[in-house]
Image (cartoon, rainbow, N blue to C red; front, top):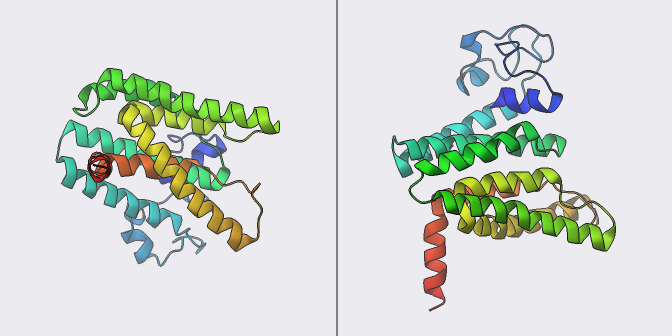
Length: 238
């Protein structure tokens, strides 16, 4: 995941070089210096060869990936469904940090992810192929309409094309109900965080905040808690 986060925005191959290298000195990193979290602690956050500091991002991504794996195992067990959801969350983790750093969502992830998601839905008991296709259409279509209306009113680009393709990809895994849930949660969390950042930095409403991470939060929340939250919400209205 860290390799993808670092290399994909720079249009570098994730397979060549096959092993990780220090971005400061270019030295190949030995396997024992590449153990998730443990190597970072052992090396005290610096390269063995040149002593350049290693970004805290690396153990953070590794920790989040470990928590995701544990959560999927506890929720779905050692099943094909669980494997699909773990890969899905891993992809969203990569997209989240790339969007934070570069404010882009690489097409090389989201576009292939759409047909892969449609195929993967065949193995998901909670999502049929029809619901997956509707998730694709509603996910991509809803943000496309928002972007079109915003541009029509302001003559400026608002919602990025990457977000549109990302929600379309998300829709193939969570279905149309999951898309609606994701839009609601991501909009609520995004608004809260965006306003907080704007106030803290003294920015105005034109300050751009990447939306991809919030779409990821909404989608992951749905995977683990969506059905229960929806059930609770509709029974609360009775």
